[in-house]
Image (cartoon, rainbow, N blue to C red; front, side):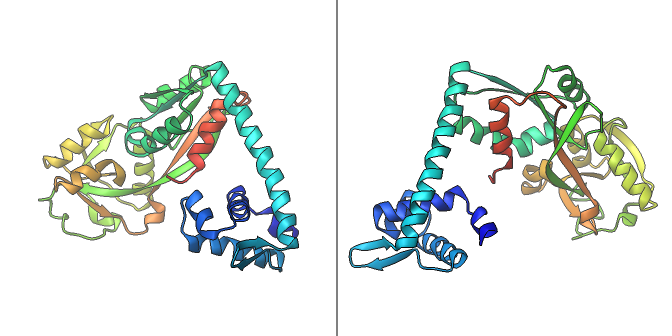
Length: 301
């Protein structure tokens, strides 16, 4: 039972306490913006973990059993301590008006990170968040020099002075113009793009190096006809029929919805994933603002 109890989240504790204090499952659901069924399921899960009844419904409402009263008091103590901790962190942040400097590449910043940034600014309006969109090599250099606190980029190179924290994965897909002879396909083997005219990222871009390694592993060569250092120019070249390419699907959702580009999954999609990571200088103390931002990046959007 000890391991099961240790896994109980503060959100479940808070919901249980709200039921006890409001004497109502319905009112607790409203307070936590969830359904009454969700509250009932949480309480039922707690009772399974403890192997005893914690709440009894009656005409007067929901009443805790003796075990429920003990859990309520312990949970209330934990929640009060958590609330005091969060108030202390917010107080430190507000008093020092910290600036958190984050660098990210364009494809991640515009197409993946934006929702997290907006959520963080809503939750922590006193933090001055400075997000810079730039090239991967400049981000790495600025994080190492201390000019940036965090970097968020694709496929970062290992460095003894960098801490690399996994963030997300993006599936790479074939992209082509709507009138390309492969445009109607629902999936492709890598071998099917052999010798096709190919619009590529510049050779120094980590995503290009990853794609080249994958194509070599599949024993596929392509006819690289153009090279670009940014997604927008590459997409325009594909759109006008210069050739096909392999890119993260997320960067072309707008063009796909407008019928300007076609995205085709590659078979064995697990192999065609580029890893997005957070980098920070190893050994550098975590600021309160940085810890809060990293916590936001771990939360669902």
